[in-house]
Image 1 (tube, rainbow, N blue to C red):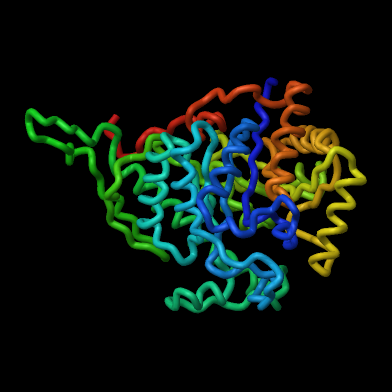
Image 2 (cartoon, rainbow, N blue to C red):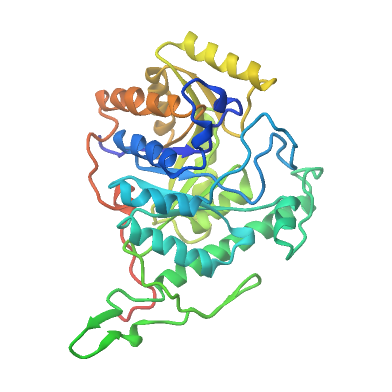
Length: 398
């Protein structure tokens, strides 16, 4: 295995299909309990996956991309992703934990210390997936700003693109502030010398003094530098402006190709954005997102999806491609997409726990038989699993 393959799983409610909560093995009464999430992440860790992501938003789930749908026959309501990850962390040992943060409506200082704390609690396995909250309904929950309604604007319209770019520029500033705050304590700033009564070396604490269009933050953080130095920053991207955020600010990007050729095209755009940001020499992993319906034979998987679609009253579609088949067939697709240049895939199980178990007990062994995936965890931190170095502190004296 010359180039490591990276696999992630995106966890959301009872699964990504809206009727997943009605499956016989679903646990709808436990979705708001810690044990449910511990069980899912423990299963993913048994499969030696690199990381799990936890979905979050500032609006209820909705079948309508742009507004609440008022439906009562689908899962609505969720726990805070960062706190779920913090609850799971002490009960896992190796897998990365990447909660979603809605950066449009969350101060970077608050999340910087929350993710730093998660990194301490997990002994260096934390990350954060930055999410732009572009919906007017989300802004209304906070009441500090009004956002333009982009639903009726043509994506090629300069006005729509300007509004989108404003939100993603703000997200890039958010990441920059968070990264500076993580570095505002140098390694070893905590002296803890009982004999001299000296707990902190104030010479190793630094003001970040960030002033931009969206934030003005002095610092330093109130939380020491995290074990990884910089927890992993991830972002989901569907088009040019979000691709720029990945290339400019992230360690890890999730994208939504339709096939291997599309994966290569998207990767080219991300790499161009990375180069434009002066990061051509840095490692930025790009994983392809894929919703999966997995069973021992394709006909069974197809029948299960059809049954779920019937219960939902409509054919399931997603922003990501939808795969229906066997773990072996999925392994073929994984090989094709990684040959196109992707670092791996982030799989979205259509139903939980069924499709997650198909990943851990079917796909992973198949990839291992092909020599494409690890047979044991080879690092103790998320950056280590992803082959990312622990970065130097920008404020430390050379």
